[in-house]
Structure formats: C-alpha cells, structure tokens
Amino acid sequence: MAAYYVTTPIYYVNDAPHLGHAYTTVAGDVLTRWHRQRGEDVWFLTGTDEHGQKIMRTADANGVTPQEWADKLVAEAWRPLWEHLEIANDDFIRTTEPRHTQRVQEFVQDLYDKGEIYKGSYTGPYCVGCEEFKSPGELLEGDLCPIHKRPVEWLEEDNYFFKLSEYGPRLLEFYENNPTFIQPASARNEVVQFVKSGLQDLSISRSSFDWGIPIPWDGKHVIYVWVDALLNYATAVGYGSDQEKFDRVWPADVHLVGKDILRFHAVIWPAMLMAQGLPLPGRVFANGWLMVGGEKMSKSNLTGISPRQLTEHFGVDAYRYYFLRAIPFGQDGSFSWEDFSARYTSELANDFGNLASRVAAMVGKYFDGKLPAPAAETPEISGALATAVTNADRAIGDDLDFAGGLAHIFDFVRKVNLYLSEQEPWKVAKDDSPEGRAKLATILYTAAEALRGVAVLLNPVMPATAEKLWVSLGAEEHLGPLAKQRIAEAGTWGRLPEGATVTKGEILFPRLES
Image 1 (cartoon, one colour):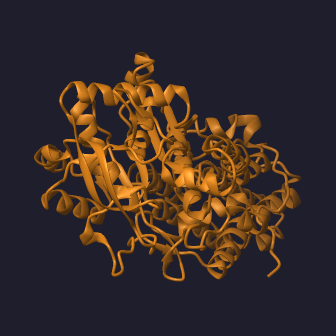
Image 2 (cartoon, helix red, strand yellow):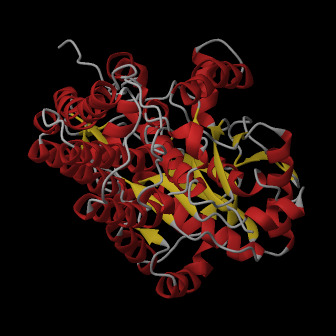
C-alpha cells in the first residue's frame, strides 16, 4: 500500500523556531495522525535547511562555523521543540547529511548531462533573508524586500542556470489537468498568473561564497540553496539510494508550505521533477501567515514569539488546538493572547473539560463508577455523532480545513452539553423507581458514549488530553489503545460497554490565572 506522505518545509536554522514554524508543523502532525487513525500507512517528514548565505552570515556573527551553528540549533532548539509539541514525525532530514548532499549532486549532474543546465551570468536583486532572486518589479520603494522590508543586495555573478522558462506551457497544462494541485484557490490563482506572465531561467548556483553543496562538475560553485532544499522531499524517502522505499512513498501527497515560499514549491519544484521524469506531488497547500501588529511574524522583524511562551501558560494540547481552530488554514491570521485565553476558557475548559468532569462525577455518584447499560439508544445524540464524524473526517482528512473540522466536533460537544442540561440527570436521580433508574442510566451512558467518540476525534489534535479522557471512560480496557481507534468507528454507537469503569481523573483544562 502506498504511503500517505506529508511534508513540512525544512526550516532555516539561522535562529530558533517561532510560532509560524510551529503552526505549519502542528498542522502536518494533526493531518498525519488523522490519516494514521484512518488506518493508512503514513510518512511524515520535517527537517532543517542548513546551507546558504543566511546561515553562513549568522554563524560568522556568532563566531562559529556554519556546521557548528546548525548542529547547535538543531540539537538545542528545533528537535526539542518538536518533541515538546508532540510532533510524531517519521523522519527529520538535515540538508548537511550525506544521504541528502550526495543525491542532490547526482540529481543536478543528471540535469546538466541532459542539457537542462547552462552557464550564464546573473545581475539583479537578491534577498538573503528569503534566499531568493527577486525581480525589480517585486521590490518595495527603496529596493526593499516585500517580505522582510529590508534592502536587497545586488548580485553580479557567473552562475549556472536551469531552463525554467521552457516549462511554462507544461506547468500550465498540469495546473489545468490537476485543479487541486495548488491550494487554496487564491494561491492557485496567484501561481497561474505568475506562470502566464512568463518564466525566467533559474540561477541554480552561487559562486561568491562556499557554504553549500558543490556543483559536481565545477567546484567553484555551490548549488543554490533552494534547489538543494526542495530535493529534501525526495532524498529523505530514498531517491537515488533506496528505490523500494522511494516507490512506496513517492510522490508526496501534500507539501505544506508558507505562502511566501509557494512559488518555489508550485513552479520550480514541479519543473525540476518534470525535467527528471519523476512523478509530481499531489498537492501544495499554502497556509497563511501568523500576523503580529499587521506584519508577518518573523525573527528578522523581531516579531517572533516562542511557542514555549504559550505552552507554559496554556499547555501543549491547548496550543495545538488553538491555532488550528482560530485561523482558517490557508488564510492569514492574527495571534492574540486575549483570544487564546477566551477560547481556552469557553471552548476547552467550559464546553469540553467541564462536560468530561460532570459525566465522570455523575457516573461515580449514581452508579459507583460503573457505566450503566442504557435502556435505549438516543438517536438525537448518536445521529449527531455520526454526522460530526463524517463532516470532521472530510474537513480535516480531505480538505485540510482544520478549523471547520474542529467546529463540527465542538458543535457536537455543545449538543451533548445541551442534552444534559435539558435532561437534568441530577433531578432524574431523585427518582428511585425502575423507570427513573433506567432513564438516568440512558442519559449518562449517552453522554459517556458521546465522549468516547469525541476522544477518538480529538486524539490527532490533542493526544495527551484525549488519552486522559479515554482512560477516565474505562475505554482502553475494553476497546484497546486510543491510537488504534479508527476515525470511521468513532461514529459507531454503542462501543463503550456496560460496566466500564469510569473515573474522575485530573481536570482536562484547569482554570488559568489571568
């Protein structure tokens, strides 16, 4: 079975990760966890981009070699943060690893041998922050990069060029035949217009510095960092070294990227693959920017916020939830501490956490902690769960609409809360007749079984919290580990058996100090 293969961008190690990096990586983690719970074979890749002028200058400024700087940042910042955020990646690629550098040289050499690369000269603007050749028309007044708002540098170099201009018609035909290749629609429209305006050949080498992978036929040049970086998606899954693995995993199903690097992934990357005769990815999905004060969040603009500043206050699971719930994936969104606090209190603590606590407490109080058998199914809740599963599965698993999928799940949570409020089990408990006990049993079983489904649906998003809920419902003893539960089965009513031991564990989302 072919793997469902998802990648994040590989991130520059010029500095520690901020919220923007974590936003994309958490989205990839939730998406791949979701597909694992569909029962699919999944491969999730992330990593670091360690070559280029920006890394070299940062290392020089810190008095170390570029390799020493990259090693330090990866060991002390990048890997520890992904572990902290419960990122379950299958691989972590570094572009300084031999498994990558050797294959990049082979790829570029093959293109050169095919006549796809020629030597020429480049004169024009270059943004070291973006590591990108710019056209004069892209620049802001004062020759500023439109992303970093800093002056570009003007290069005059003899370089090697890839014949990108020849691939315009093929790319447009591919976009036409594969309308979901670039998402969202706004990103697709931008790329199509860009390609229609005419492509220029791409400089694929630099000769003014040496921190990069050497051009194999000309050691005076290093490979342009973006050509090097894009190839990580192929080299990490066996391109040129493990054909069996490459055939099983490639092509990528989804490349998750920030919108500022969309053109690299939607224009240059597919053209490179076309030139090499390799299958193209299924989808390039460009998420929006996280904004602070109306500007893109970034370390270079001094607006980078460390994820740990938020997880220390709200917790890791709330962090994972908030950004995917509050910002429609593919759109820009502004981070607000106040909005995070409000959603934490209303959606996580009140709607979800309080529901779990109330149900566990009432099963403990009225049935000695043993889940009672219902007298009948409650169609309004069982049907709503099945609908929530279907809608959330389509939204998250197929459309990458994380906010929409979570909205379906929490609409269901609120429906269960309303059900409890209307049924008033605390009043029903006063009726000791067989009919009263049967009604109480049905109410509490319905609420607990609803929470079972919620635990399965939220496991990809909030794995630690979902696990606590799973254990408190007594589900693991009867149904097995939560990670083995299938999304489709989440909506199958009646899986939680009579007699399961329900315990009131720790509060899922405790009240926070202001």
